[in-house]
Length: 146
Figure 1 (cartoon, helix red, strand yellow):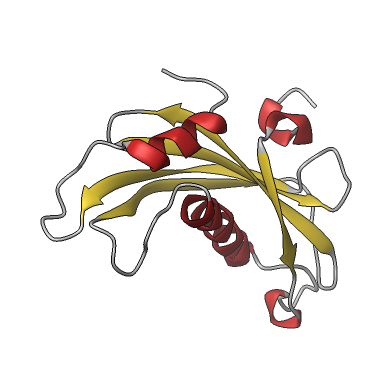
Figure 2 (cartoon, one colour):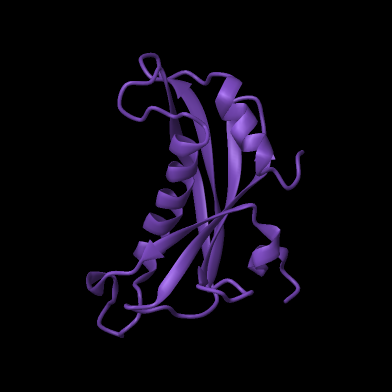
């Protein structure tokens, strides 16, 4: 386990995820596209609950500008899984998240990746500095900063 993104202890926040029958593909495991949905769910739940992001009416929203996923082992319905979350890099208006999917109780991730949000002003779509409650929430799960 040389990659730190594989290790449960390197994440700061977790949430349970319920796999669904329709997540499985014809090969009998969760289809790769669903991992991105899991990643998005984990990050946005943290941003809403901890950072105060108002996705429907807030002046500030986040746009995904980059994402990637590395698959290590398969999961399938009805596996009990957990989404893991951390911040890898926190800039002025952008943030790179580290996200992973673990089978419940396992130390090594089944899949892990990153995605980057740029926070923008909703009406102008221009980048805006991350501040206040959101910056504090992101700093709480920051593992490194560039």
